[in-house]
Amino acid sequence: MEENATVLELKDVAIFQKDSLVLNEVSLHVQKGEFVYLIGKTGSGKSSFMKTLYGDLPLKQGSGKIVNFDLKTLKEKDIPYLRRKLGVVFQDFKLLPDRNINKNLLFVLKATGWKDATKMNTQVEKVLDKVGMKTKGFKFPHELSGGEQQRIAIARALLNDPELIIADEPTGNLDPQTSVEVMKVLQEINKAGRTILMATHDYALILKYPAKTLKCDANKVFEVVQRAV
Ligand SMILES: Nc1ncnc2c1ncn2[C@@H]1O[C@H](COP(=O)(O)OP(=O)(O)OP(=O)(O)O)[C@@H](O)[C@H]1O
View 1: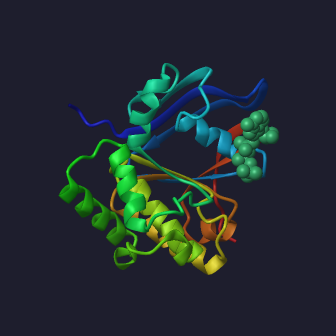
View 2: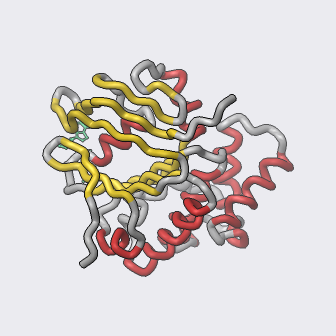
View 3: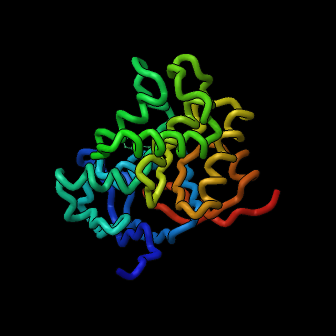
């Protein structure tokens, strides 16, 4: 099969929450390997945009293709398969508090169809290593700092080798220094060839790690050109 270098393409998309229009005339294109920021004021539609991409909000108008799934014709039963090709990271880390990190990650593997215990353990080690947390698998989420928990959440997003990582304010709950540490992990993952779309309010991070930036404003999404300050 020919490799498709486009991981996301939207054409003339309108996004609604209930009956109200949040974003309109959204057309964009993300290539494999890109790092893309999504910025915009509170309520401008960043989360609604991302929810549309991972199938939480149905695409009602326009056309959209993400990691070879057609968002317009996406059925409820397709959503778990779409989510396996996406790694989603949230502001609140959403780790299961009642089990340690290894078991948190194994839980996801089992839920996504993995069966072989040896392969599962190897994969857990591999993703923990990628985020610099290889020795922390025995810890419970509450025994880790916010930045460490977010690194685990990133490791969890990597478990199924996703084609696109969607991160919704991944540093939103972290102090500036910890945010930079988490950002470094995302940068490394991107340098290793993975595509990342990250919503953020953190302009300091954008200045420190410049990349293509999309802005939600006045019901539109457009690319902003960054100027040196
Ligand atoms: N579940 C919902 N039901 C109805 N309206 C919603 C829902 N979620 C969001 N909205 C509305 O949609 C608009 C966009 O919200 P959204 O959460 O996408 O913005 P955001 O840019 O992600 O904001 P923030 O930066 O605060 O997370 C807002 O006007 C919001 O009130």
